[in-house]
Length: 172
Image (cartoon, rainbow, N blue to C red; front, side, top):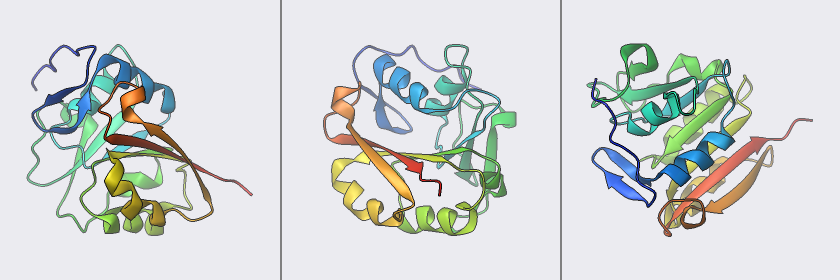
């Protein structure tokens, strides 16, 4: 495994991570995620850089990255990384996770498929991060059962054109 580079105070694009990362952005995201022993599943983790930061001694989160085989993972140890056989396959561990993280997901259908299969299980929160322009396509995935709080990433340590959507499940 490679060691993650030092985080800068300003949003920086790193190879293999679509979301520009900064120490303030990671601090913000970490406040949205549950502490251990709760499980966070990062669906579409790519190189695993964001997840490696969140699992580090700085944040101590229990996070597992999910990626399509063959994996491009460079930063997550095997114990924190799972593979699915294609973009149409779902990771069963989603049933046990209380929080899902989707960063720059490629397909609206992927979010819909996870919700259809596992929404009635343990997941209480979903963090979606990507371009403001893409949110319009994804927000329809979330029924009235989900409350959305939207954050301009530029105001919390990211790039101005990115959005962080925090979706919380409404319990009856």
